[in-house]
Image 1 (tube, one colour):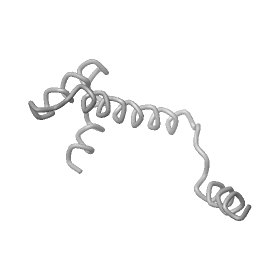
Image 2 (tube, rainbow, N blue to C red):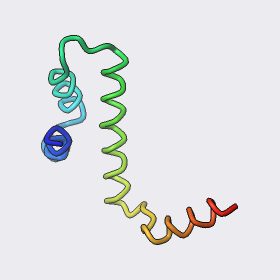
Image 3 (cartoon, one colour):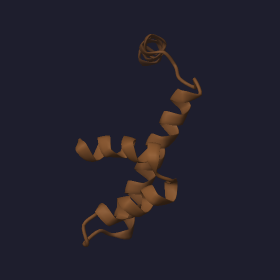
Length: 74
């Protein structure tokens, strides 16, 4: 959880390149290329989601629940 919270600090004060380097440095020495790729993609998805929230590209929770209820009842 602390790692997740630190990411939010990183995105406000570090460039994407700095975040990527810090992320890789924090991984264990036994990490694979696939592990690195997965971690970078995960953090990138978080950044995209936060950018969507800032720009208002969100769907209210109530609307999502209604859509899911309709979709699941088919």
